[in-house]
Length: 111
Image 1 (cartoon, rainbow, N blue to C red):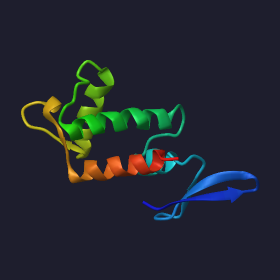
Image 2 (image 1 turned 120 degrees about the vertical axis):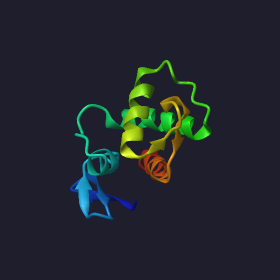
Image 3 (image 1 turned 60 degrees about the vertical axis):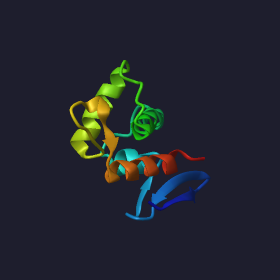
Image 4 (image 1 turned 45 degrees about the vertical axis):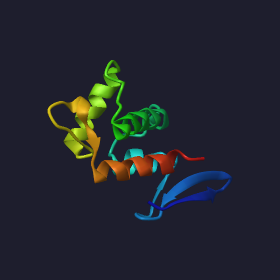
């Protein structure tokens, strides 16, 4: 994922150099362009929350079972191929695809 900040008449937007598409917000490259969500609300904060769940799963020490967002992310990530699991979704681990998504989230959220 190659991202470039572009000045546009005193404003900035972001270019996904892999696709040539411009986005208003940096996180929209991943949120809208790759994951296919709309850009309204607070996608950046949501990406931060998802990143924490992915990091917990990567550590294989997920302690977020009481968090309802954790349930949803585990089910969604399993469906999308970002996680795999054995007998329970709570025993999930990151797939290669999940590792790549976590790397992209980190890149988009870095300053």
